[in-house]
Image (cartoon, rainbow, N blue to C red; front, side, top):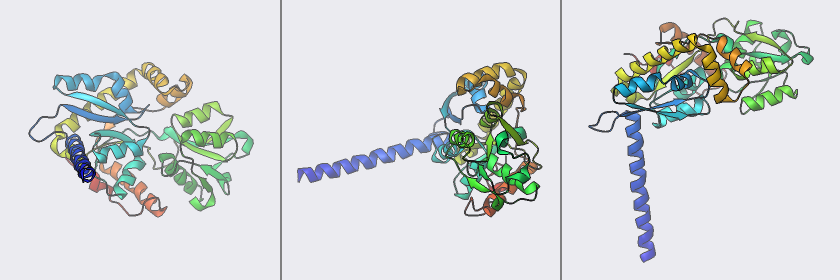
Length: 325
């Protein structure tokens, strides 16, 4: 009987701990516990992106300190895991490419688009080895093309193929697990073409004996990344959302004017050769902007294409997830 009671006691304790954990997570998601002011902003970032630059610049941390608020930075390996942090309530605010937002909305996850980066069209592209004999997009018909499924470079490759009269069915898609595996498949000839994104795209261009088939010349594709936040953080702290975006833009302007310093920071953080990071940084213009109708239309076009390609199970209306002040 005592054993049975102890089991029941353990179950009850676990239930209490679970409830407390859920309550704590909700406090993070809402941005404030009931009746208390927000003291910490939890921000998710990925190595090498604009929020990483913001973190290293200290611009947001210093400005937030003046408001009596601290900033806690959480590192994520890629955009999809960062989005999970958003809708699970682990972070208030984060940054990811265009695809993760579409996938999250198709799964009916709670979040808002709250801002966007300047276009970075040259940050994605397609490379082939010189030894392949491929010299133009039309030559990819019947060939193996590697891309991370649903990534910005996957989408841009689809658009590039369509621009020369090919369809997604005219090539054989190979979906590596990550950028490193994609690079290995490319260098060993297991795929004929590699679609990639910076800094991995720049790395493939500079470190392999390759030809760049596409780099920033895909009509209609700006290659933007987006800023996302939890619904509750946006609804309860709209002034802080605007504050963060203002500081991102300030940091971006600093990055445009201090490229060599940014290159040094990212080279050390990513462990990638300086010339690769230089290529990545020098071919883009940093800057944050509000979500405009034009941006929504472009993102909607991508979402519609993902549905057509059966990458998402349902159609989505991007506007539904855009924060309206």
